Length: 424
Image 1 (cartoon, helix red, strand yellow):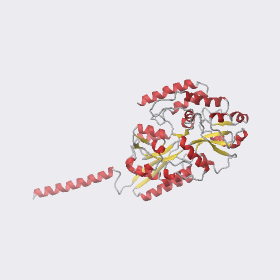
Image 2 (cartoon, helix red, strand yellow):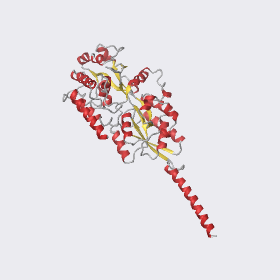
Image 3 (tube, helix red, strand yellow):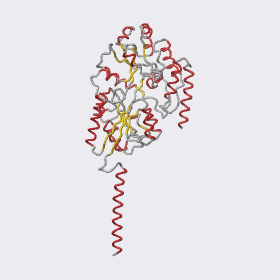
Image 4 (cartoon, helix red, strand yellow):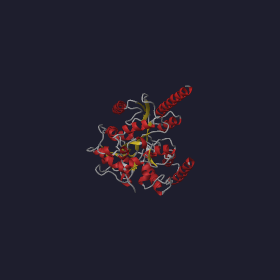
């Protein structure tokens, strides 16, 4: 009798342990079915300012509301970070294990994050058809060693906006805008006579939107795909010398070396003939009366026709306790319907094949879609972000007359190589 009781108790304990283990497994995989998963999502204000409002708020409200209706066990906590110092905030939060479950990233950041092992691949959590719907170029910048570390939401392209009234006054042809460096520079003398500037160059801004396009257009590179430092070249020297010659001739603003606003203030004030600026200038200004006629010119070329353009993606960090749920949410966020709505609202180019026709019949945006085909996403190397300040400092020294292009570029090569060596 005693033996039967003991066996019975043992069987009950065994069954209880199996049940508890099952509960534990469910909880470790993201909580029980009765428990809500709260996802912290970090994004940025894509339509200006430090927060979202208007159309952009409506977009996010709709996405979150619809997703939570379809996924009763998930609650989305959207937090908007200003663009300024965003990278420091993200890295600090991830290091403290108090970061988001998904956040926005661009290619040169993503390369750094992957090298630091702080991003989780999403391949196992999203449908194969989702990945197959992306343009190859967009998928390439989020893929490392066969693993996909993010889902693209947008493509951007930096182009050339022309004040056509100033072009006419300078003797240019609004129907035949400059295609080359020489053609652009030829407008400089008459613009200077009228007290106007030729083009912006933000010496205090990111190299992606200042010196890099000129280096690429000259046929040069900064770090190649093999990880070799290529910046010390005749092509880089030519790019630095070209910008410096425009500055010395008085065709650029005297604040060029430290300018950070991308030249937008001078352009809007009618003082600047050509504005190098991203695609979102179009939706922000197409319905406004700027006091002058404007248009989009060709992507400039010297030896190569190329510009800067990014692929913005949402990624999942390894520190997230809900990686599967986060991946499923960003898959929903970046689906064809949501991506199309977002890109049309904010003036971006959709990286999905199924959303390729959203600008059909729109002359301005269709032109940007074509120009995005010659866009370079930046320095896709783990140190790509870290070398930015050194690159910025190098051309500032040239513009301020502190050093020659050859000398600063040689020193820059050494600094970049030292940074790579230090990172191992």
